[in-house]
Image 1: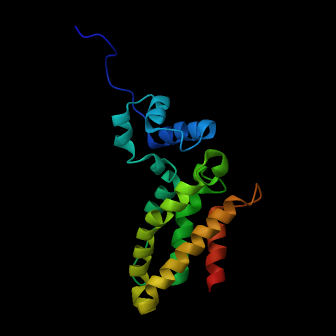
Image 2 (image 1 turned 90 degrees about the vertical axis):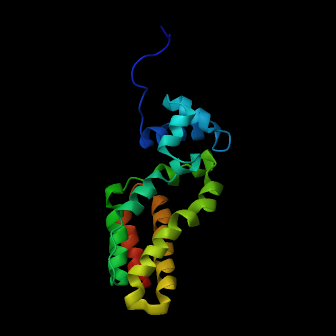
Image 3 (image 1 turned 135 degrees about the vertical axis):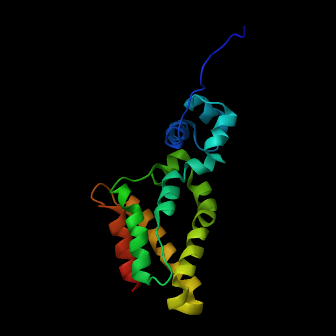
Length: 180
């Protein structure tokens, strides 16, 4: 008879992994935290970790990935409708700032976020370009890039506005309106 733990292995979730990672990033910094450290803190194996996410940096993007998945676009939308679709996807955040945008200096995540932002947002630019193609023609790519940049900048600025910041969705709508 084999010894050891019996039954189902412990299960976790991406939010559980994110919480474990953030604790470790705050304690010892992003670069000094290994995947093994995060898995151990979450009570799972290294191989189980990769069943949830593909890389340590994915944990920083979890909240944003959920927003990106909620953005509902349709061919022929105009700029204002695209901005509203992005804002609507942000509504579940309310005024809660995700971990990826808080304490970045302490966690040491500034560089990895800057390096990975294009990879994360480029598929959204492509989706918006396709959505705007009928209305914007050849300018669709430039308009899409401008809308995504404005929205991302608005969210970063919103995250730094303090307790009276209001909802993230409102910040994106204001940024979109400023683009005209």
